[in-house]
Amino acid sequence: MIPLRDANPTRRTPLVTLSIVIACFVAFAWELGLMASGGETALDAFVTKWGVVPADLVAAWSHGDYLSRETATLFTSQFLHGSWLHLLGNMLYLWIFGNNVEDRFGRVGFLAFYLFGGAVAGLSQVAIDPTSTVPTIGASGAIAATLGAYFVLFPRARVTSLVFLGFFYQLIDIPAIVVLGFWFVLQLIDGLTQFGTLQAGGGVAFYAHIGGFVIGAVLARVAVGVAARIRRPATPPAVG
Image (cartoon, helix red, strand yellow):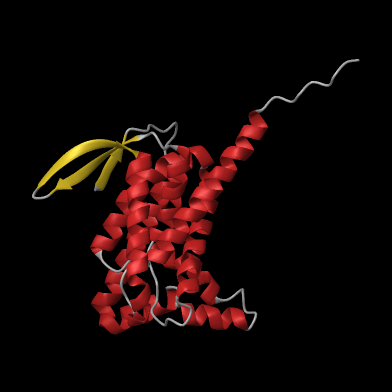
């Protein structure tokens, strides 16, 4: 099941979502330039420096060095990608679901939410495999947080999805709660399957997806509750 678009209009242009998409493409172009000029060695050094390396982050924090480059990688890693497929897949999900979450949270609120959700997602992967020396990169953790928020905020929105039925496929409009719920269950299954092979390195950071989705859903639920309290009219005082 691959989502292609949603029937959920926005009130304003999603400038932050657009800016994140552009920033990810610019960062990937930089990676391609490094690959062209310095080969795999230069690219690997760049990714190791600016991607989240769990062992390095744990070492820095164990010495109380919280304002460090290792901490910054929780944010810089969100703009790096390992391949065209990795980049385009992430940007498709961000464009479909990010614009509506930005519309609901506001531009500044969404930017803060996106970066924070991505950082928590990165920490989720670190918590699962703290001794790993393999860098984790990609916007998927922050996007997972965006999906979690969409799941809470727009569960009934219709999402046009490409559904494969054996050798055939069909475009079907499916409620977001089904599309995103199915996606999350797949992350859980793949994460549990991967758990015993984490030390092998590489692969997909499923626990970043899981942690991102959960924190996104929680923050959206909190935001809904706060908004409801603000809108609720104050109870007039009793008159005796």
